[in-house]
Length: 155
Image 1 (cartoon, rainbow, N blue to C red):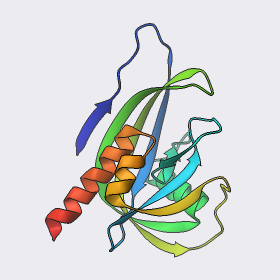
Image 2: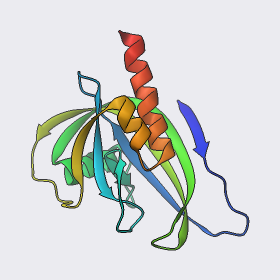
Image 3: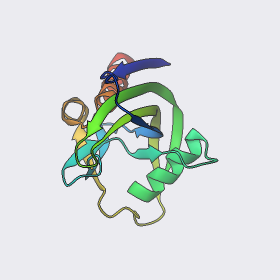
Image 4: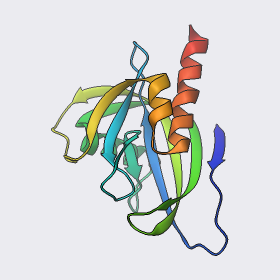
């Protein structure tokens, strides 16, 4: 599984670590499922992969299933790990440095079983190439590009 780091640790900065699991979902038409949500705790919105932070005692897979239910209201089928990415960034709204590590999985959507719980998260289907260019986090953009490249090689 590929791993890539984005950004650099600023000397002297204190970072909050955040580990999460994220779904890369491509449909047959080449669109990727993205979630438009508040970016880094602020008023701005960004495009993200469905998923989120691991809660104590959860596995990566349990986290991803829970997050997809909360954000999409859907069950998922995990097709396997795609990549891991990490990114160093500064969240101006919270005035804090973050070190995020994301475990990205190939996923297909299952049945809709509930209404999404997170009302400020909106599902958007975006052409994969456009979605990769417009995403808030660089490592998630890279994950979409990897999945899209795999898809193109299968054809």
